[in-house]
Amino acid sequence: MEDLKPRPANSSPLTPLGFLERAATVYGDCPSILYNATTYTWSQTHLRCLHVASSLSSLGIKRGHVVSVLAPNVPAMYELHFAAPMAGAILNTINLRLDPRTVSILLRHSESNLVFVDQLSQSLIADAISLFPPGTPIPRLVLIADDTDEALPPSSKSSPPAVEFYCSYEDLVENGDPGFQWVRPKSEWDPMILNYTSGTTSSPKGVVHCHRGLFTITVDSLIDWGVPKQPVYLWTLPMFHANGWSFPWGIAALGGTNICVRKFDAPIIYSLIRAHNVTHMCGAPVVLNMLSNSPGNQPLKNPVHILTAGAPPPAAVLFRTESLGFVVSHGYGLTETAGLVVSCAWKPQWNRLPASERARLKSRQGVRTVGMTRVDVVDPDSGHSVKRDGSTLGEVVLRGGCVMLGYLKDPAGTAKCMKDDGWFYTGDVAVMHPDGYLEIKDRSKDVIISGGENLSSVEVESVLYTHPDINEAAVVARPDEYWGETPCAFVSLKEGIERKPSEKEIMEYCRARLSHYMVPKTVVFKDELPKTSTGKIQKFILREIAKAMGSARTTRSRI
Image (tube, rainbow, N blue to C red):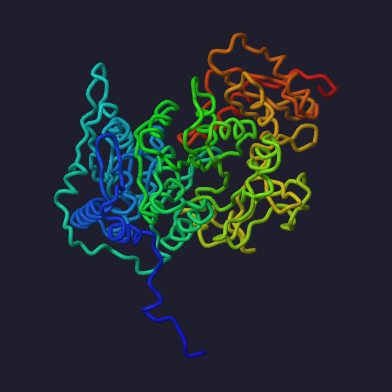
């Protein structure tokens, strides 16, 4: 068999961009995008993307150029996940909630050639560009206009700052060539996406993914979640966050319907579910918490599958969400993996367990998806696997085809997490259970070391979420003169409660359910906890607050 070698017929580079062509053929007359009064079919979406890709090429965008986007979940944001790389560009979606200084840094770091800007982000891009040092090349700007009511700025506000736009997004659609031959990758290892990490624990890093990795994670995610053909998918997860966990390409592969939404809250989500018979959606645990705590919420008429990740979901939140008719699946991934690579694969026999036990099992992250080669929890010092006892802490390590190529312009950072032993070191702390399911306990920076013992903030938060009056909870370390660190709980309370609990009552509640050394020594009440755009609580902000509070007043005995 030595004469059998790769040939052009069997060596086409893998890319998720081809899913759009197939959708236009198989599902051409079926709805692809619904956004308020706007409806597109898959044939129309395919043509619009070709037009935009053609126009980008006419503007001089070439293979390897970076094209950035500042936009919410509107049709143009969805289309650019195909159109920009179809022109050979590397797509860079930027978090809308970043400050101008950070946006300016990211645009310069990525050497972005062109930026698509939603009309409500004109002030943001103007301020970001004003921070460019003199002589720095300024990328061309393209305006994403939107005449819907929710996209129009209030009349009481001043007009957006004068920003020079080269053209509008619809200009690119109108002037493009429908016969454009899109730029296929020369190699499946060619970069296709540049994402910046959320920066919840450190400065953002530029994560580069290739066509092959994105093809792998897209197909893998559809298989693992068990998404059927032609789902109705509601975009509650920002597409600028890890490209919506690969589902812009995945929904095209299945010919589904994308329900785009500029902004949302619980009433809007429930309204869209009813109006469009939504079948699937994704969101961080904060979305589950919002849905389950919404005043007047009613059980769903038809089940809606919701995939959650981004932070360990408390079992109490999972229980409340599923009681409303949502079918929750739980996974784990990072920006560096382009999506979810570990999932809590459900076993039929678990359905016979009490609801509270089912929720506890589902709160675990689970096992590797079929597209991953290996997942383990190791001792970071020895590199050996930890005991499968559900209590020994270690670091989560991954190996598989969707792991990033590396960090842009940061070889030291790349080498630090992608070591010579063949593993990608995530920095997440977890345990491995006897049945082979892993459970995240913390980010390495969020572990609290109190009196020499490692304390999981997630475990304390899970108990806090069971309190009937608590809406949100986060636990961080507070300096302590005697113990080194002690748990400090930040909580927000539910609206409409008759009497607000005191700090002492919250501590007593925890004391009845936790080992005494894990009970928070400080409880801080806030109207709302600081979060990223995807609902991750920004613990680094809370750590700074706790640090500024100084050493906790303690005695020489545990609580």
